[in-house]
Length: 555
Image (cartoon, rainbow, N blue to C red; front, top):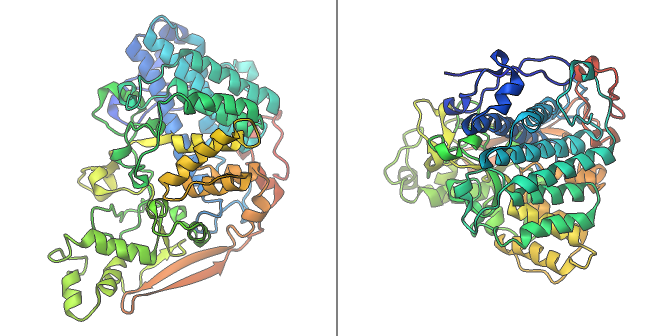
């Protein structure tokens, strides 16, 4: 039976349903009917697992929102108009909804840390996970909002209006929380050892987050020390095929520091299970791909999921055309046509498309293979329009039918592939950035080159900060890092100068294998302003808490 948790939330008393992603995960006792302290103190291992399950569920919600929301604000996504750069307020600005989710995570973790008795190894691990996710939530709060209130315990009724925190105290809270996590969390036994622990966070995951936090705070020396624990552990490595990322081939791989487990029949790893729908799905009425690509006719596609021309041109200028990372991240229309042909080789002779034609039938009429593929690619409309698209289609984080659970309705399909929360490739690039200009620079270069060579690029003999910036942009497209990185590096005024200026519509003409790009200026577009470096505190929180000072420039 599905049960409910009642939670007193920050800045007021709000009611949250502690539901998670599957019925199996909803087996959580109704805390409102029990003495909370007694429940936690006397919890069985399985009850404690249900408590941390709820944290992972909220962390998945926050991850998907932060990644999709921040991606849309960058030069890597096709401009789609309705962004913070088009006159958004504290009630409508992107990412503000993530504020409450991150504090909900913090609340759940504080409840576990303060009340759960660590009298078994299982519960010790769960408390370690609570420290980890508390730190993760605050790392994102700090880099998003700058000075969020520091809530290091479960608040009493008289403490629900805390003032802004200070950066030094906030970062110290992250560091100490992660050290507590490190003291409790297990390491995996060796390479290929993650599956024994499930998709849950490990000691090295905590070191990775600690190193990242130090770097974001500007402490390169401590960042190198923490990240070295991961790099030198010998427990992690990159998937050999970039295109295997975000597919079932990547599940429990040595590249994933932690992941959200989509295997809903996996009892051992149920703490991290999630119904994964946050993927790039091209709308079925716009684009038709054979070969097992998932197509959504039910508005599951994300408008901000399309890659920008700026990003595609950036990859090509780096010499990545046709190489592993480009082909595993984004396709031009020509790339997509060629992939249509490649994926269709075993299908098109006998399989009808939406209009009942086949590649062979079209070629029998005199069309070339490329023309026939292009005509089929554009679907069933005479002049299909792909909104918020500049003609560059993401193939990273894409649902393939082979990776999906069956369902009676297309809109009910879910991916079987686990979703990584952090990849070892990011650890290597963080390490390279932190090591630059230190005695560890040669090791940083080795880390950088490991990422480059998997991408199909040559190793470098030296590197600069700009090298790292470019490598991170190429490697981590769509993973929620660029927006915060560009602001941290002080490059936003330049790199984001034209984000949101136009709203694009790409039209395909099946008759003559052509496309037309329409661009409309966005009403209210202002361009980059300094206030955008920090997300505004939500309007609702400002109304509830008179002690909270709004970020500069936001009314």
